Figure 1 (tube, rainbow over the protein chains, first blue to last red):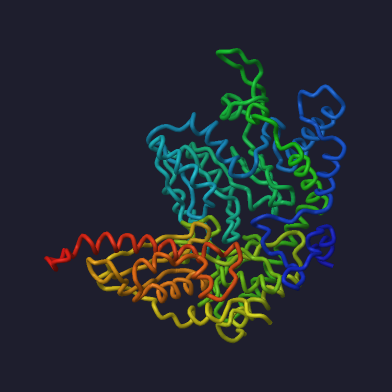
Figure 2 (cartoon, rainbow over the protein chains, first blue to last red):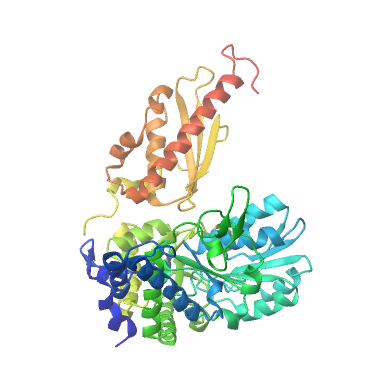
Length: 413
Length: 140
């Protein structure tokens, strides 16, 4: 029995039907479905322990604080971070990247400095830097993507210079599924004197991640793509980098003492968590971490790789289907983009939805990459721990019949 | 199984009647749907400075079947019609012509061509009035 078949029953939503068909959810890269232990943890929190954290001198307040901070400890271990002070709760990857920008980058970068990004970035790791570049007169440079859907590492060396202060890139492409060689890039970037920020949104659901082992300075990810609720994410930052930084956003929680004309700042990590944090979200993320670790992160990785190998083998056999990204299942994750000639990706997604198959279609918030690929958009199937070989077969069959379903021609072979 | 898209949408998508470009358009506009990156361009020619009728409408773009079929229907509804009448075309009249219920997630596929058309028409009116005085003076 595959992992997907074994754990499907943990995901209540997979019991529903869509357009008269069994739901085949292949949009986990957008957001993953939630296992029952996460739903139970949220319910238990709200039904038993709901209170605000940190300053409530009553039983519920203490329980809530304990649960919230215990979630931080579990996430520290999950990420391989050395210290709990390095785990800052945010509402997601986007906010985490913006937080690194407003705390560290605004202080560290000056006119003429360069930020090195890549052509495969999600807008979340591109647009914030565009804004900062415009404000501070920084130069943005981009590592190109090869025809095989990988980063051009030779170009990386040419693009790194004394002026490069930051290299910010995605761990895993949300379009191509490519796993970027972060260890190697970190080594080269740090040798050039640059800091490294990694967008880990698509990596944490599929791969074991060890931030200390990777040697990165910042690592951002979202909970909802790994089974936690929406509205919770994390910015990991190395303690010695975070320690001298001022808060980016004012509010309660970030202070030690406040006067009418000044304030002193709280310790890490609370200095960067103004206002009431997403307490239940953090509890849910802790439960999602427990769930993934319970399955075994190597097991999850092997499951994903097997599904990718199966999907690529089947999709490559479909006449005319254009696939994007590396063909080697070992260097990518279960995020697969494709186009069917003569069919717009949205129409393709509509044809699949008619059979209960949920895929994403469009530019995937990666318009520069779409231009690099020479397309307006792609359709994208992405896998979760609950994805089964049967789901992959249904996708293949759905694609085979898409022309027919849309009334555009006969089914393909 | 029940058809996913109406026959009208499929027919217009497969056999468009107004797709293309105009040699001497009075007004043109192009825009994208930020949700999906789809792009539609519309070009219009009016009947001169009197700005009474729409002589020709053409469109092109990278877009889905619903957006392209909507643009084609819109062009048909507007071409050869009084400007004032064409200005009254809205989501509902276009929807009736399409003979399909469009789901909320695809509504922008319909409103994109409509918005592009309206902007192109406004520009065409401006240009036509300015370029050809009623006396038939020198063209721009």
